[in-house]
Length: 230
Image (cartoon, rainbow, N blue to C red; front, side, top):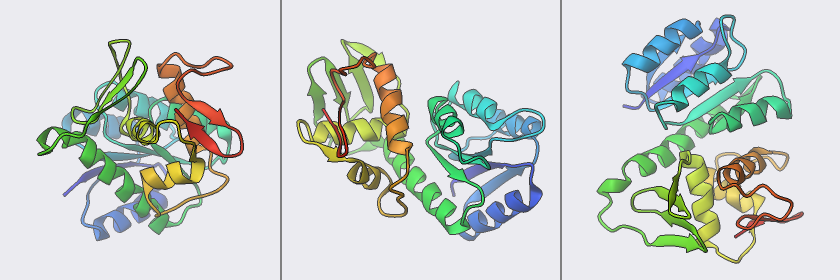
């Protein structure tokens, strides 16, 4: 059973999330304080973390940053603020997704399942019986067998979500992929919001890692009103 960390100082919310996760047969490590959660991160092999941003001792951003120093498992941020700043901060620090309070528990569960599916595929890639071909464009190389990204021969560290996005774009080399198609390619059909900025922020983060943030990006091009292409 996958092990999921839940951190929220609002006990009713943390308890509710725990109930829904356990109903899906996940093992849940629930904490109301950041200090206890950090101890769990150091001692347990986790598969996913759900972090509230607003905590009394520290914030979810700091916990996410701590996780990303050593681990690549998915992180979902919970925020009571429906602001772009919070979303961008979380995704930039390595979070894979965010959920705004109040939320529907079943939507959160759908996002958890989508993230875990992608993480399993990412982490089990070495045991794949038939490696996928290498995808490349100019000096950008994506090895889908070993889940490595290289630019000019140097390794680029990508989160599973970033890797999946870049893979979809490279698989559709030269073709514009709409934001909605990108979203559904990564998260399937569990949820989608036309107002979602998740894809935009992840693309921005990938560009930063590729040093491709100028006015005319070389690798990932924006086709305004449509989507993105390589």
